[in-house]
Each structure stands twice: as C-alpha cells, then as structure tokens.
Length: 545
Image (cartoon, rainbow, N blue to C red; front, side):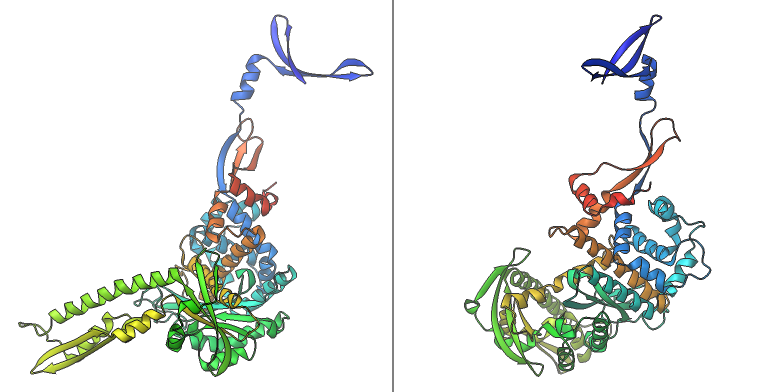
C-alpha cells in the first residue's frame, strides 16, 4: 500500500492506494480517501491518545489470581454465611482487606475510598457503597473453627497442585498493640519490639514446603514458647492427618525456644524432628577444634559453612547431631560482645562512682544496688560476670569483674550451633540445611512487621475474634505473595522485590479521539523485569474488557 495525492478542482487530497497483480495485470484494489491537509493535521494532533487516569494494577491483579488458584476465595465464600448483606461477597470483602493492607496498611474505615481509587473497582462491582460495618461483620465470622476449615481447604488445594508438605517449620513472634482494655488475647509479656509498656498479641506460624503458611495461631503473648508448642503438637498432627498425609512422612523444624524433654518426646513419637540445642548443653561440643570439622560448603547467601557430625543423647533420646560453624556469624557475635562488654563496664563504673555520695537524697540500699547491676547486664551475658554487694560501716562496696574462664568458654561457642535430628540417614549438610530453612519463616515474620508489605500492625480491632481474623488475613496475604513466588519460580526474586515490581505495573484509562469517546483500559509501559512477571503470571487475563 502507498499514499498518493490527487488534485480535484485545484485542491489536493490524500488517498491510500493498494495495487495487486491479478491474472498477470496490475489492478487497483483499494482506494481510500484520507482527506485534506487540514484534516490529516487534525488526525495527528487533535485526536491523539490521552491518559485520563492511572491505577495500581499489578499487585491487586496478582493477589486476586493467587487467591483464586489456592482456593481462598472459594473457601471463604463456602464457610462464611452472607445472610442479608448486599453487594460484595464475603470473600471479596475480606480479600479487599488483604489487598488494601498490602498496599497501604489501611484501616477498614477508609477501604471504600481506597476501592474507588484502585483498579479493583473494575474487577468487583458492588451495587452499594462499601460499609465498614460489613467488614467487621465478616471478620467476626472468621472464628477459630472457620479459620481452621479455610486453612484445611487451602492445604488440600495445594496438594492437588503438586505442593505436598513433607516439612513443617514452626516459629513464634509477638506484636505490640495500643489495646488497653481487650479480652483474653492482649497481654503484657516479653516484647520482641522492646515495647514493655504495651499489651502484646502472640502469633505462632507453621509453614510448609515453598514456605506457604499451613497453620496460624493467635495467643496471649505471656504464654512461654515451650508451653505453646506443647499444646500445639497434637493440633498440628491432627491437621496433617486431615489432609491425608502419614505423620511419618513429615519432619517438623523448630527453634530451641520450644525445647523441653516432654515436648521432644511428644513430637518425636509422632513425626521426624530437626531442632537445635541451647548453648548450655553444648559446652563440650564447642571445644572440638575446627580442624576436625570434616565438611565445608557455601550456602545460598555465599557464606562459608563448616560442619562436624556427632551422636548424642539429649532430652532422654538418642539423636544424630551436626555442629555448624559460620565465620560471618562468629565475627558478628564477637563484635556485638565487644561493644556490649565495654558498655556494661562503663555503666557499672558510673554506678560505682555514685555510691556513698554525701548530701541530700535517698541513699541507695544493697538490694537496690544489686537490682541496678542486674538490669545493666543483658540476660544472655549475666553468667559471664562475678558481682556482689558488701556493706561495711554503713557504706556499700561493689565487687564486679569479668570471669575469664567463663568468657573463654562463651567465646568458644561463637558462630556455632548444634543441630539434632532423629533422622540418622540424612547427610550432615542436609541436617544443617533443614534447620537453616527456618530463616525463611523468620524473614516472613519480618514482613508481617514491615509496615510497607503485609503489616499486622497497627491493630484496629479490640475483640479477640476480630484480632484472630485480622492476623489470619495478614498471614493469608503472606501466603498469596509466597504462592506468586512459587509460580514465577525465580530463585533470585525475593518477596520484597516481587511486591516492588508488582507496584510498578499500572493500568491507564485512555481515550483515542475526542474526549469521552473510545475510552479503554491499557497497561502502561513496563521495564524488562516487570514485563517478565506480567507474562509469567498471565496478568493480561485480568485487564477489564
């Protein structure tokens, strides 16, 4: 095809011409009038494509896809009674909380405003304004039994997709809240965020293969980890049996905070275990020189690992063990100790300098002085110092010193961890790698605390049932992100990078021609990385027609 200009009555006009050869002769088959020069000018200036709105598309579309594929939407609609609530389905209301939380940490009171400004308005079409009371009503229906049923449905769906659990990892954390007068869940306790002035809620998370959340528990944060784990063992086993997997095929991995003789005996009678010994049980093992460590390799973070295989009887049972040593951890712990040791000695000298001072004011007692010294030393370092208070002739004397022998013993364990398992058939590297896989769940717990990803905080509800529902929805957001990582299957891609790339995929509302005519939704220009994610997740199917 080509252009040609024809002159008619002294005026020039543009035409599109197409010639084809038919039966050996060139024949004109298309003659399309385009117009005058003024008309052509209008076409290329006045009626060009204009964008009138831009919406976040990547994250809402991807999370919606994941929620459909893992069966979250179907299960929530099945187990939550809609009754007379009009508009969005239960799953759509609750999924909106998950997506809104992962984008802006929104409270339910502003989700209606967020909805109207997001691309979700094109996926979900409520006939009424979104009600914050409806959000609360549906959250109240997410009681412990309903959450259990939904988690069970998701596990069974994942098994059908070939993601069959063989390993479970259990860990706990807690979150501070601003709840002053709650029910049974908010309690004072040992805050991992150092907020001892706030009521806390505890969260226990069990993940399966691909680091997909398997079971969530919300509990009072003043319950010790070992006690919590003891109560949960039977619940975890029951869940495994419910999804039709023999317990002997499962290995559970847990931190040393869960250790007790009763717990180890109870859990190892039901399934395989991988755990770690507290340093107080490893003094002799830490004395084994590194020259006797027979295995060495690099982990996924390119850190050098050395390991030595041992056998031992711990917690009343015979186990296979592996002493793991990491040089980078040794250096980090050594630096922490050197800084903390200087800090402790400086604070003690400051306290000593204020003893027995004359003048007005309340005199320090021997008990008060001892309490101040104990508070000055972090719990993990208290056994390294010798200290006592003596009162002579009405004056206090503080004896304080670093115990050299105990410090030497302490330093011998720097960078070392003793891992144990009942599976003697595993290689030393397999034992260590299985325990180190806990790092994945620890990273995920960080994302639940990250205010820019899937934050549990702030908690906008007060009643226990709604707190559990809130935590469950945040964990479901974590599950959806990890399932997307599974679909993309890129070992270099982290959950944080995935979230960042999804946020860059935006949808524009544009029109071609006169304003208000021929409006359509299109994906804005993407870079190579976001385009690959868009293609692998097949997000094009979610562009509204």
